[in-house]
Length: 358
Image (cartoon, rainbow, N blue to C red; front, side):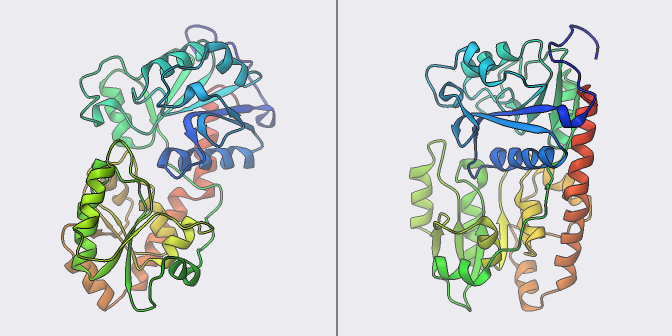
């Protein structure tokens, strides 16, 4: 590693490496939390000691001043205390989107001279309200930038930031869900068609398109995530005008795997996703997916996945009329090959090597 010397000691034994995963929030249902949990599990399986640090949600160290909506950011010494004894800090999106610049600045100060991986799930130019900002993400010679897609890595490169694409992955293939329990929990009859949108409700998740597809398929529409970013009133209006039955949220005691199992198909109608975990989750759950044509979906589709369009219900309706199990089996095999435990271990091992910890 060139440039200014990093303070962390290089660890030659992977078992000795202690990694901190730091985020605005962890342990909830958003994509960043789910993807961070994949790395936590993967690093632990590789023998690393892992510590989670967040401003909200569930973590080993909760530092309230790290939450994205706080008015008073964490003090540098409080962040440093949470990171004491850590060889590598993985920063999940805190240095990617300027959701709370004073919090990001506090984290940047605490990371100065430390080995860190800045893992970018979203980037400012991908959001209209942040697109005018310059100087993001912050950079330091001790830091490694990781994007979750080739598309984002290339966009960072065009802005002078050297980044590596590291896809999401599973430390273990998720267990299949309980279809009977899932459908019973939300009151869906045996012959009712159920279309699952496993996302939060914010403008770019394109809830209107998900509802429209459910209406066209004569299906129940199920949106599992909460409304955020001031989207509550608009969501309420959309759901009130829906011409199909609507389900909201995930009942207590039900896993997301049960929601996937309960569904007859999955819809990801987003106009933009940094990645879009339902691309892979639907495949592992053995469910057909209707997906919008956003850049990273096109990138992942090139691996060979077979999906359905969101804006034309006819192909998915035809599949329901004459299901092809080979399509689902092929998608699952691709998901296991490219996003399963072996793929994740390889990518994490390469990440530790680039950080100088092997």
